[in-house]
Length: 254
Image 1 (cartoon, rainbow, N blue to C red):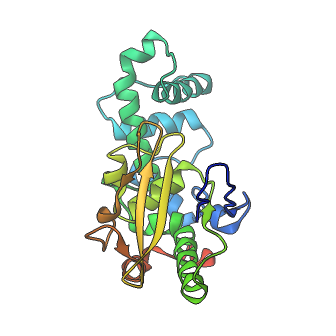
Image 2 (cartoon, one colour):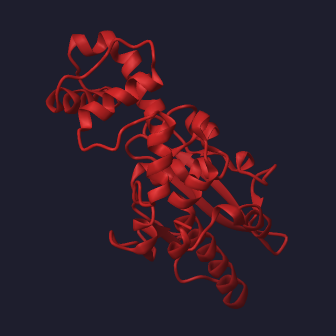
């Protein structure tokens, strides 16, 4: 695939999904009515436009012993901004440092609650959120393999999707490898989820790798994926194991 000599040019075809593509939009938050109902019911939250009120209710539900509450939208927005700054090594005020452990713990639990992963795992919601995108990926890998089998090469050697962190988060947890990749946390800035297609014994196999900015090298999480006990993993068998967490876009709220 790569040019051999120094200074030689290697053309790598890149296909990136546009922002308004259906498979990207299919993961829109709270896109199904029943999803919102489950979200509200689990912590007995009210359906309200008062963001501060709902945030405080969620905080007390997830961390019942907390003394932290937010008085207004400005304070809430500041804390959310400081959480991200602290994660990325930026300077934060002393008062935030004193309560950073609790705030980061809440952020982790709130993300898990919002997308029903980890202790709140709900496979129906995870399927609804990431199922159309995962189906597209497996369909693409299958097409890539067929093209290689027929012609000995493929036109698109690298396909990139630019998505929000929660799509990576829900996909990892739907595949069963969320804790292996993330622990109890969620994807940080510059997170990359890579699926690499290989040939082994004339059959297609895949590797699943995860990397974010705190890592020097990608971590191979293939053996943690449901149905995979080794790396690389058989593509056809993996598609069968994961068929229940893939769904057509039009059926995502069914």
